[in-house]
Image (cartoon, rainbow, N blue to C red):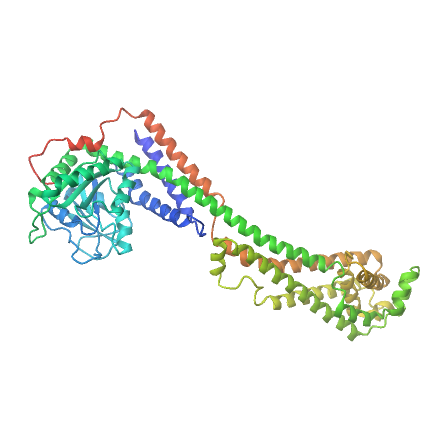
Length: 595
């Protein structure tokens, strides 16, 4: 950032990056998803807690966060640096309390609720609320520098660990405190590795060190720092010593650290160098890490797409199967066929149809023996047959979709948390199917009644009645494609011909074709709507995941924009000054030994 315009552009890009990261929810339990969810949350927190507020207030005091392991002596160190008790050391573990920020009174305006760590409530007293930030103004502190005492990074209390990580991510300078007994522990080094990865300014305090072990431990620790990319980080040693009743170390024990911090606060160029180093490193790392989150978001999109395709394939098959079975004559068997034959009297009539087609229509008209109650029996048989067909394929589709989802870990968890057994049709599906079939039959009845409005006084219309003509139309619809073979083909085809001729005798050829097509379309629509409602049990579950296909590219585009602005600033930046750690380590000692 070389000027106001470039700073504004970077600020805009970072706000967009934050928005893109917030959209990436990563809800499915895919391999690595939990890690990337944690990374995303950490990145959003760092943007909100540190990067964006710091970029908006580059002149704000340098914030040194004191972090470290349990029992390392962080609070005692902070109290000793200030020269009075401002933060309470934890006697019992785990210690849950608010973080404490010590600053010069003139710098109070920089630490309001709208600035650094905006989610933490500002308080002026000690509290056990980890969602609060205790502000302690102290004239002993040098203007331009603030010190924050953070919870233990390895606390057994998860809330403490999370807060400690959040505070360290908001630091301009990490003042990392460890002890002679615990300096090789893994957890502190995990944090230090992150600091090295993003070029954060770090100083190490080796606390509670026996005098006889200073040389051995500092030599080993220095090698560990160098091997992990932190060779330029200042290393301070605090020897083991008496702690006063006020909880303070002897002033001479922390003199070197106090002088270094004081010198850093008074050297505006050095202070800005530390801020810029940490801020630039944080921005660079955020842009780089965004691509990993975007990759995870892409995997989520792909997984949702596959799960959706599996559910759709299962129910598309069901829709097709029900459509075929309700049009190829399959339904014209069993109870439906028996009731239809009672209605039309098919014995001699079917034999006549096979040999003499020239006088079929009159023959059909004269041969039909059905009475109104027999037409009603056909209607009931049709209703039962259709309901059974639809329910059978709805159950099969649910089983197929569930089996597909169970083949993946993400699908298994979705099924587990669905709140119902998705491997079976809905509990109310039979009732809805019954209603849909009855509604369709009612539609068929209305179509016949409307079509015969001008024919109700004719002998043929009166002979069959609305109900009789309606069941004839249903039979015609059920043999729409005549796809069955063998003996069934003859029965289905003959039944359909009988129905068609009955209808033609009343309405004529063209009207019958139109009636059959309309009835067929309405039946297909009704069955599709039923099965689509079942399908939505699966697809709605995926919709609640709110996985947007556009999210990964939005993250990548936002990260690329941040990188473009960084590279542009680098090309126009003046020659870099020495590294902050080296520069500040060599400043002369001030006369006043307060930090």
